[in-house]
Amino acid sequence: MAGTLTGRLRSPLLAAAADAIAISAISVIPLNLVAALSIQIALDLHFSVGALGAASAAFFGSQAAFSPFVGRIVDRLGSVRSMRLTAVLVALNLGVSAAATRSLATLMVTLVVAGAINALAQPATNQFVAERIPFRRQGSAYGAKQSAIPVASLAAGLAVPALGLTIGWRWTFTAFALTAALLAIRRPGGRQRRSSPPQPSPRALVMLRRGSLVLLSISSGLAAACGSSLSVFLVQGAVATGWSEAAAGLLLATASLFGVVGRFAAGVRADHRDGRHLVVVAAMMICGATGAALMAVGQPVVFVIGAIVSYGVGWGWPGLFIFAVVRLNSARPAAATAFVQGGTAIGAVSGPVAFGLWVGEQSFASAWAAVAVLLVIAGLVGIAARRRIVREDPFGVNAAVGGAGT
Image 1 (cartoon, one colour):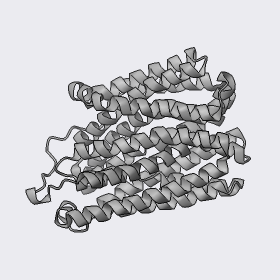
Image 2 (image 1 turned 90 degrees about the horizontal axis):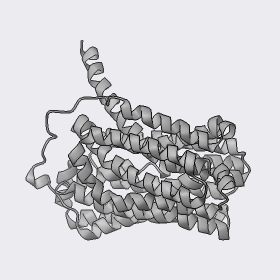
Image 3 (image 1 turned 120 degrees about the vertical axis):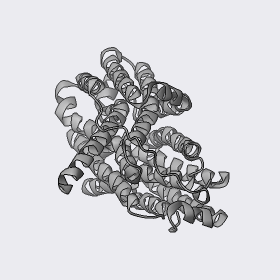
Image 4 (image 1 turned 45 degrees about the horizontal axis):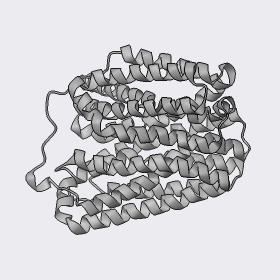
């Protein structure tokens, strides 16, 4: 009886989490397809590796620009309608990209639109998780939702040998447009919770000071610059190391699978740990630096190991990071996450641009080495932020996380 009841409870939770992941993943598929199929698209549209960084910046820059305004749309439509609208818009965007893209300028326009759509998807899926996942499971849920980016990379990577090298990049975009359309008509899983999450006592309501938020923003921005560069340039970097385009696509898929596991595992562990989340985030960043250093060696097998470590650990921190910021700023969680995600967005915009320019002037090996250095700096800044938080309000931190610190 107990097992049956547990199964009934878990099934709606899994369905809700799966829907949040699916919509979050499909909303970033346009950029991931461009990155995974960049060699074919570049040959067709005649652009260089540096332009790929600019294309990524167009996507993330648009997301950052539209993010402050889409919350009202989600509030008005509700999470489910907003998620369906996201899927419809992604389907249209991919369809137009496949049919009408004839130049780099057109591709940039479609990515700007895709970035705005992704800006809508994030608050919609966040609200969906908050409505349908119990508070005690939300660490795991946000970890799972943040795995949407590597899920999209996984799908795009598998699409290279399965679709891109057989039917071409335009038909690959069309296939994903149809997938998005199917998601738009699917009924979301899970049930909306009737009870509110437990309210913390006034003593547990804490608010981070601006200096601490700035340090956290710098840390996340540096790490996001590295992670987004990894996502965008992994295929081209693997080809430059000696792998075929098909093998490079499979490597992207494999590394992305490790990224999914890493993000979800970090969230699950957070649900069973009272604190020290920022310490774990910093450790993941520094471990990712080891992977980037291995990629800089330039040896094909070592490159694979480095890519898996970088994706699985070094790019596995975002869900845990947001979870930690929410716990440490229980008085105003939305304001705190918006502040630090500004830093994340700046890093995601600037990182691929700088990486592409660096590769154009230097080499992939030196660019991966620079990524390793920046990840170490990001981790150290995160540790400095934690120390400042504890020093400024040790009682508030302990109250917020149950006595174990940040």
